[in-house]
Length: 300
Image (tube, rainbow, N blue to C red; front, side, top):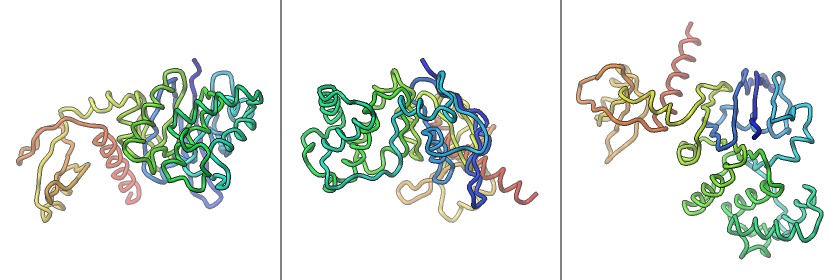
């Protein structure tokens, strides 16, 4: 089965913003999570892979396809759900899917009818297939976007912030759909929501300021934090003290009081207790390390 190999990819916009800095990733068949804050460069990377933008440097290979040189070949096997997409509000979901299916080369009418019907069932829109898209809720529009991305049975599927606007039931349905597809497809899930990656992905990378901070298995990343993560409930007035004294990677409120997580190679004492690491802790520790590094570089 085909891997997606991204090598030394860089992109700087005309305004001087360096969106991607020497990105190198190896993405196998299965679900790959691309996690990072807004502005990390995720959408730029997704658009370049989807042949919608050109990089300044680097290469992308999908099986035998050189993505940057063979855009049309890649598009034949690509499904793409961008973060924002437009719809024709006066058309029904069924009619627009048929139209998009023709554009993707599904010419045989019987094949097209069967594919469109199956996809509408799969994304739970069959009962509203005659309804105009202008009357769809945000979650329904997102599910329609998923359906159009799957029209050509893609070998490479890119979904950019896909759970935005989905309620918990729709989100779980979407998780199940992606999990099923990822058994035979390279699926890239770009998101800033840690739970999306935690639920679905066996491989992931964290991106920040256009750079890959870490890549690997979520389980292996969590294991590296085990035995080094500690938790304590503190008073709000003491928060700055703890931030200056410890490597505080995460803070949240519980019953009105801050609960902090710190990383330490030795037990810090002072009422801290050891806790198991989760993927949010991995993400926050990587963000903390990156911010600390950037602060040091700015003040060097």
